[in-house]
Image 1 (tube, rainbow, N blue to C red):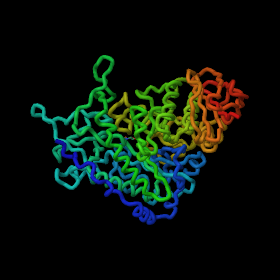
Image 2: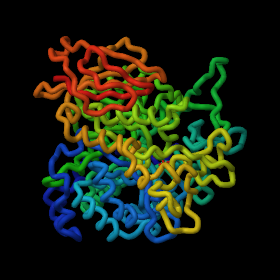
Image 3: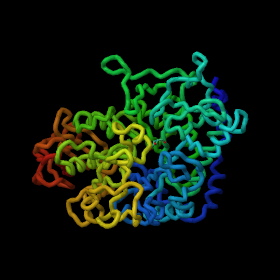
Image 4: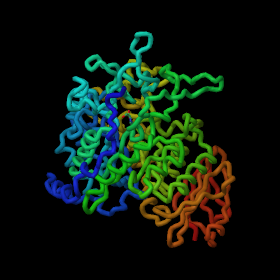
Length: 595
Ligand code: NOJ
């Protein structure tokens, strides 16, 4: 019997929601007036925007301890403003034992001292607002740290006030032996069930053992988390990125998951030596959508500004993605579309058809909502995972072009803009991410995509003044750094700045419709952006190492003109005169206005 599951799951949740008037009264008590005058008063600010993910440990260290911090981020806001971003998503900065580098939270209403103080956070929000940049907090709702007072109390007995806050379960007894209740697995290896000697029960943890899952069937858990949401709204955040949001609920009957079978009919084995399970019973259950609507109601209780909800949504299909927006647009504003940027099974091959199909789905099959494309983050190898030849930077430009010239909100990861590459640890003893220790050498963990930002060619790449930084500075910093690229005309940074500027300023590239062109072309991915006023821009990306020539006929798209004026292109091909003949160098890009 599962003690933690409450049947009174869907109590009148209206009672949990603070009325709008209350929240704005609380807001007016916020420490600084400017927190109440955020940059993001335009309710649509997040549409077609650029969101920049910062891994705070690795962005800028201001106090010389080798770990990035909030004041460090504040000191780099001018750089981010120049880059042209609209918002920063900060991965978790709450107090945490740091087993999962912040995703194991022990206090939701404070800042981990290694990153600074709440006053530093308010200062960051204020300074960011002055530069029209919003701050997006990471909200980890699925689990807490096992050091959180809620868990400590919950595990202390079976009848304390938080006894049902986590997923407790009696063991299965087999031949007198205690076994986990079923075959559910942790994403990070091993059984998802951990025996707790104090409580004499198992608890469920989808991620590390130190990250027990909360029981979202319990209304008290929901209320506590909606209070957290309010707390940070009062501190002026522009939105939340909802961590592991599809994992909040599991099968109420606790049935075993099926195994994923290989060609030989036997279960596949992952890097941790576990049989790979399907996650139909532990991921994306329909109850998630109820919680999203409740989170949305809280976020909507802000006067004069829009607080957005972004979801970490690794989903199986575009249908599942569409559902995340809510049937009445009352759930997520921006569920992450991982289909375009993270092909299933890690097959990162630049395949024109796959990109065309996935982008087209996102543009046409999500009820006209705003796609959020994500090509890089702190959990996956960086963009260089796509590179299989010596056209590295050119491939980087192709990817950036798809990200910024699509009709989307674009999520980028710190360091992408200078072409920082994945730098995994060489030796097991250097690995910091626990999954890299457990899975070595097949799974080296996520350190490789979390290395310090490369600002210049000086000490610690300008990231820190410490003798040792928490992760080593990659050797590439001598040439791949902000200072060098700011003074170089054709740098990756230059391409990013220009692409972002076009996304903001050009009416067709900003919010024009997106129509895929030349659908049978196996070499070049091309699309048209067309604004409401009929302005048309063509984008063409060569997916091959050979030069290519493309031509377009846009009459079916209602464009009768054919002269083209270059907005941006990579070197290696002449400026075309018309859409009849556009030449592209190897992995070349062309963006031009049709007039
Ligand atoms: C997703 C986060 O992006 C990842 O870094 C973390 O380990 C898991 N969720 C668990 O919170």
